[in-house]
Length: 218
Image (cartoon, rainbow, N blue to C red; front, side, top):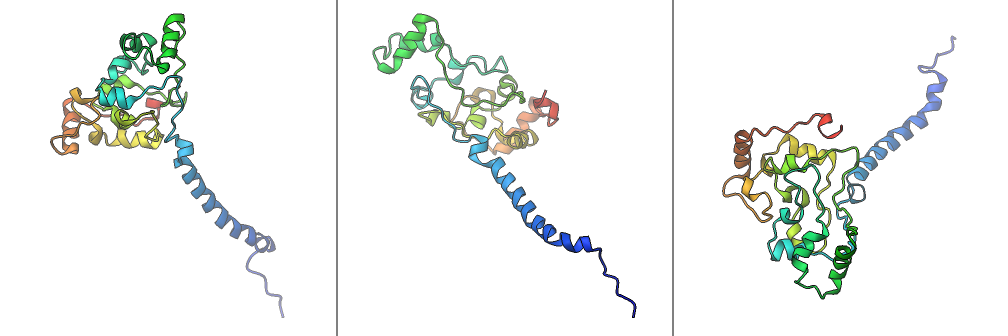
């Protein structure tokens, strides 16, 4: 009788255990990548470095109601959000609380001319271009990216600031838009449907964010 020819070459049979392992390992690896990409350790959500001066946004922006632009003077005119110089702090603290221990680093900075070494909390990678002026000038409120800063004793990163998170807003900006006079108002709430208001603002101000790669990666 003729010998029956096996349906597959012998090497296929030898590879079957490895193929089975790949069917388990590859999906598990993909799940791990997705989890790692969205984890707080990757996105820096909750990042809250200790600052050289114990500055409370909860007190200054919340209780006292200081406008964000009083300290961050360039958000409407430049891509970079300026860290306030010592002179801005000392406008008040030259007389208010000047005897406090926490004010001494400011006094030393003012006396020597050396800037306070603030640690930037919201710090995007060098390969990402972000323009504060373009967002603030297009009706995006500070709270959309920074969260309720006015409730933070010590500032932390509240949003992922990931590419997917940014694209989600660029594709559907309407819910994040607000009237020009309420950009820095953390507690602002719309008097009408937020999406309807946002769509009207998009039409009135010709707001149509780009989703092209070169917009943020230049």
